[in-house]
Image: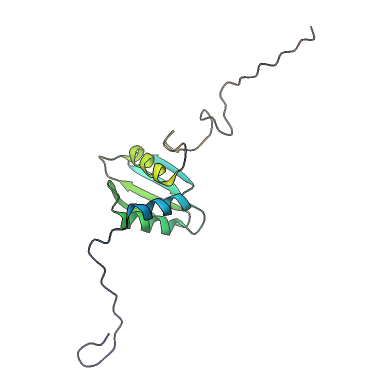
Length: 134
């Protein structure tokens, strides 16, 4: 743009004060890129394929999703800070529903493991085989 005096300078475009993306856009982005949802206290962690977290974080920030204070996106992880009233567990469930992932919010990490019916489950087995050689 030109400033008084005729000099050309670079200027950032002004964005609307409240640019809100439709919920359908957020649903598509979460459904396509979120592979895991975990929570602890008022924090939610969204896992994505490598290089995709910024897309999810930006969509969530622009959605105006109720209860989200903000996001921090890395390469394959988005940290969502939920408002105290919303809490991480409820926020994780809501985001998992939008993403179409299953099993989110089952525990503080949302991951399968010992005692969570996943790989490495150290719980009791239902082995009913017997040794009839006796």
